[in-house]
Length: 261
Length: 186
Image 1 (cartoon, chains in turn blue, red):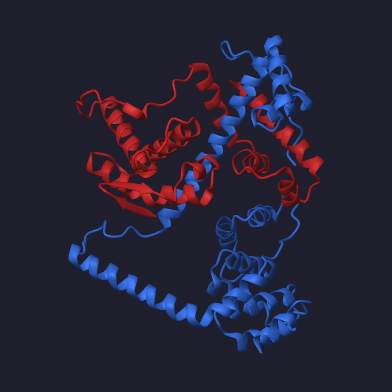
Image 2 (cartoon, chains in turn purple, red):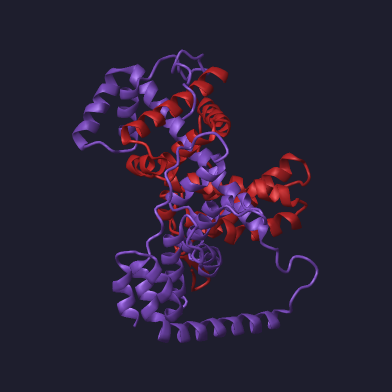
């Protein structure tokens, strides 16, 4: 956790927005509940009555409202920078030099659409059963406990928090930065694979998880077997999936295998 | 996706509800689907890619704020995307006018006017944003998860392997710290 913050309050005035007071934890909590509309109708009315009699409370509410709005806006700004970093990685199409004639563009678009439609049709007629089983049995790895401490694992743990709150793309991004070509960090590889799988990038997940599932001495061997099996199943490769599922030791594996045979 | 209705476009996926909820996927797609159009416009009108990014982000934040304040209500097939582009255009014209690069006729702000905000409140908010950047990662994460991502305290506690009481206490300490930076250093 962060170091102990300075005492709340006691600050200078910002023009006429009077901030020279202390807001206790309890008081903050009741102001926040009021602002976030987490109170009952009676509580809300009672709070508003208090505000009408207490000018200081009104000032505090006004300030906390700005504080929370400022946090929300600052958080949005950080998200925008992250979205921007995402689009900068993608090559800009048709902006540099060559332009494709409009008619050709339509042809390309039409053929891509046709290809997608045909693949979806082929896939759904055969793969639907496996897809459904995958959806039933796949639950992302719950992740590791992270203390968010400062140290070697700080960046890893920070991304673990993204993973655990469902922000898989960001976790992939952060963990990928930690991964070097010579790095054989099993934990990192396993969770990078887990994040890819949870984000729907099945092929990328298989590359990472399958190598962990081929060596029984690896730390996440059994989990890697389970998730590799599921990833193969999602690709419609039931026969290849079964040996991995068998080695996973998961209680639900035999039930799943019986539906594949 | 976009649906053609007469000569207007109606956006059926990027609803204002998604913006109100700070839905990350929806906001990301609103951003990525519209940036290049704005960039092309700005670059074609004496701007640079870097200026395009700044103007687009300012416009994006303005759209977000206006949706939250109920100042943008989709009507007659108007879409958030068109609204975003329109605001970016106005902001770019303003920028050019301020830089005296062009002689722009006074434009009617129409529905794009931003909140009439009080100057000291504006200063306070700016200070919050400034100090938030330097708050330290754990505090930023906790505050973003709660106030922006709208995650529950139970969810945050689980993610950090804290008890819920610890999570609440830590959130309060982070707020205290941010507030003291804003109030004392302003």
